[in-house]
Length: 176
Ligand code: XMP
Ligand code: MG
Image (cartoon, rainbow, N blue to C red):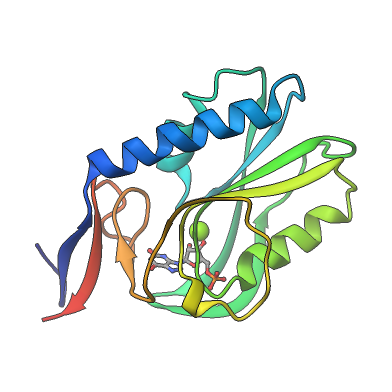
């Protein structure tokens, strides 16, 4: 698949993504049974993952959304500018952040730091993808869908300069 000046090569097919989401949702439902967790979805990238994941977590919970920026095209800037804030009350709540991908870890660790100021009862992260070799910051991620190599990926919510979020599979973006 050719997009702008790049090639999208199939990497994780949708069936594999859905299978993993079903496992993650069972694990989270077990861990948070009776805790009425608050899921905070990090926009834009995690919106599709969150929608699929949450619908399979069959426990009473709350869902909300926040939006930050840190990435410019294919390079992490390492800075997090908050756009839409935490207006929900996280004090003494069991909070689970839903993220699409942890790359350098800078974004998620800043978000976690910011969130901890509001003193949640517990705070964990579920990410669909993680690039362990790209980590620049030590972060505790409890639920990881797939550990992947340090390659730029798109699809299933993830974009390359705005393109590809709607694709059902995940692709690696490569030079032509
Ligand atoms: P850091 O480096 O702070 O980055 O962990 C996290 C955010 O950067 C975006 N990101 C990607 N987006 N394909 C994408 O479409 C990628 O391979 C990729 N790597 C990082 C993403 O928004 C994530 O929240
Ligand atoms: Mg993101």
